[in-house]
Image (tube, rainbow, N blue to C red; front, side, top):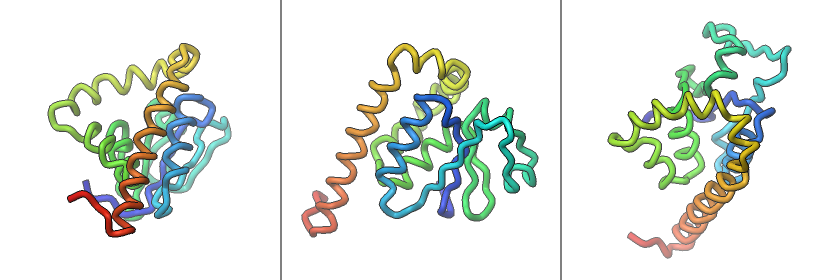
Amino acid sequence: MNIAYPLRIYYDASCPLCRTEMHTLKRYDIKQRLELVDCSPEDFSDEFSVNAGYQRAEMMKLIHARDAQGQWLIGVAVFEAAYGATGIIGMEKIWANRFLRPLWDRIYPWIADNRMFLSKLGLTKMFGVIVNRAAKKAAAKSQACANDMCEL
């Protein structure tokens, strides 16, 4: 996927699951490739989304992102790009996997529709642990490469 950074991600910060994932990604965004924009306030307005014809309601239904060249991503493509931007390649590959992608494309809208309920079930904490673990592993690998100790 060709992305021009920074990637501006429009997410629902009122959702614990969404907030946990995006803030974890941002914490590991060493290269400053991600810009997080909370589109949950009722009075949300953004010139980029307005010019592209995206309304707040659409952005609250599915995650949206805009790259530096004006390319818009919606849904699973946002997660693929965001994980790639932070160097969490394992998760990027899971989202991009050509065999799993049709499944993600079908499941993600259901998850987005039920994100508040899923957050109440405790998935936020579990998902946070998974994302954190993947991010720490990617950061350690990146640091090893910076110290000329990469595993090839």
